Length: 255
Length: 327
Image (cartoon, rainbow over all chains, first blue to last red; front, side, top):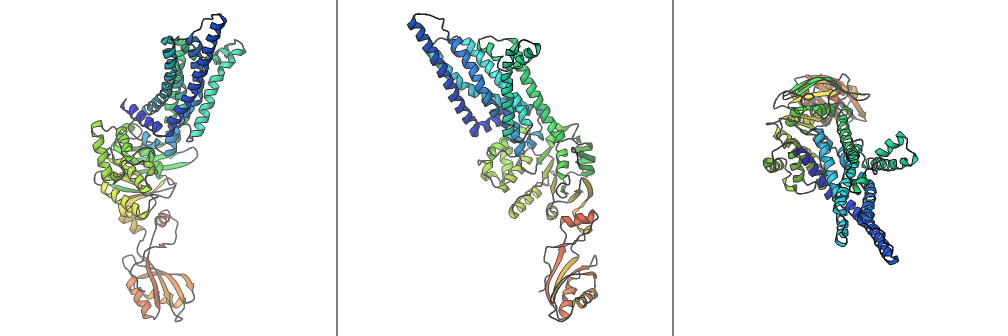
């Protein structure tokens, strides 16, 4: 456990001492702020119009602001997450520091967990910005807090899952750009799998639909923790970390 | 301390290391010699548990590198060819990270870090970022990293490559100063480096063991110091064959080779008998004959020649040092 933390701490140091963390935080702050503003503004306009015309639709901040916000944020995440995970191993391989890690008395799994954990913490820092955006909804409205908590949990799991796959991709190359591009392609693929559900209801389509990463977020955003979705994310995380550990091990055999 | 038996390593298509066996005793400084691509780095990487061997066995301090890598890793300090440094970290930050990685208890980290920084003369740059350091400093930080957990065995892969002559000297001194407590293997392709630092040499070529010997024996085998090169100006008073004959008559000379002629200037290479040094007699003979002795220098062999000789192919020795000059 101490070793995991040793690795994780160093990675976090690297994120925050280099421009990566700050660039990502800035981009994310802009985008999430823009999304929050646009969605909230249209919600406010709608409810005003409703009052003026005398028609009272049931307006709900949770359903009409927070839930769509989470799925928009998840899409922003798909773009930013490969940027977080791409350097994890690619940089070590390019610098040769991987030799230090691998020849130290520490297990491969500890290296992998430490690196992944640091990426998850980096990603959580982005989500803190989102929390700031949401705090305005709580100041000027009374949304139910429980779907917000489950929504955050969902976005966090989604990120952790993409990060574990991204970490794996990073072990396969020395080149960060390649790792980033492949990670990005994979994230996109896992996203658009959702669209296959419009092709009917055959078993293949259902399987592909289940594999889609965003479709599992929606129930979280509605305040529902469905074991189906939790299992999906956890098993993807496990798969990613397993592949990473194996890949790291195989580096030695191939070297 | 280190036992290697029948070690082999194949990459996809090439054989990097082929059936190498050697042993290193506790406290030895061993030079691991060979040209580029000989398999030095591969052997070192196997010893440090970076990669497993294809065949054979290697043990460090009694632990097998394949069966008990953890025990081996605890006892080895390794400096790869490019020091494994994180450019964005400070020297002190980096070293305390390595200390943690090497399982040094939290309470000792600060003390050990200070100690190795003093030892490797990097204390004056401890709060600088590694990316701002010169090559020499980086190498020393790399060494500090290797010794921070006080390992029994130090494995240094070309510790002086890319350094300037002053830094090379400093690094060699540093390595020598570490010799008491640690068993050291260092790889290099520079013979004088081995002479300066090591007691024992392991030579490999194309993945095969050529020889393991002490530095003294090796120098002897290479016939070092017995050949001299003469440059003579006869000033119109004698031709090449005349000079050749005169030189052959000098006592102790075993062989004279004509090397080059330009006008009245002749260059000869003269080998003397194994335990005789004919330099003084040669100089006297030349002066007596009324010729001008322009140059007299002893020929040393670089590793390449020792190498070629040991691997069976012949080559010309190369002149490098001037000794016993009468001009």
